[in-house]
Length: 211
Image (cartoon, rainbow, N blue to C red; front, side, top):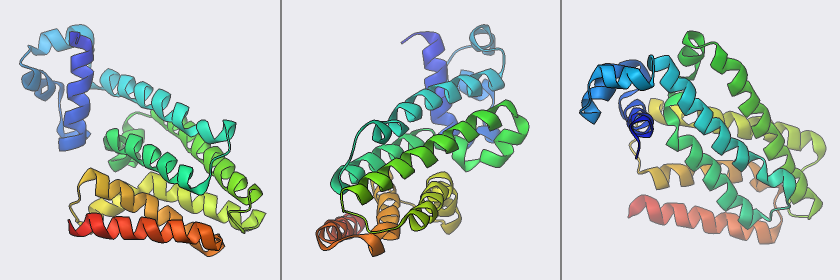
């Protein structure tokens, strides 16, 4: 791995583990066992590292969020799809855990993050419309719009809520819980067959939680 890529990889690990405000470029250089000057040669400050990491996240989450717009997904497929969305958010979780402060300090990120919110809205609208068209969801248009807002809100502030609760969870369990919360929002509008799948997800989460 090239030094530049190692810097980005190490920065992401430290930002996620220690929090971006608590991590300096000196910390990153020390973790990599390189000189601060060597790091500065590749990135002229932490703001440049953050911008590059956001570019990576923007590209990867963009590809994921555009998937349901191009194809129809069944409820079972959407469970896996939502898991992938949550997983990608978790991989870049430092952005979400310090979102307001980060945007205040780096205003250029605000407009780009709002684009991601727009992509989330479009993706969830497409998912719900597809489920409704296939007869798997009985929610009307207005009800789906409310669901869209609630789902996007959960996707954006799910980690903050979990942090405030002070519960420590393994990533897989935490992500599964997030997906289950979204399915719970949709549960009142599901048919019998889809409800069976929802209950299977509940049982799966319960088994994971006690293991």
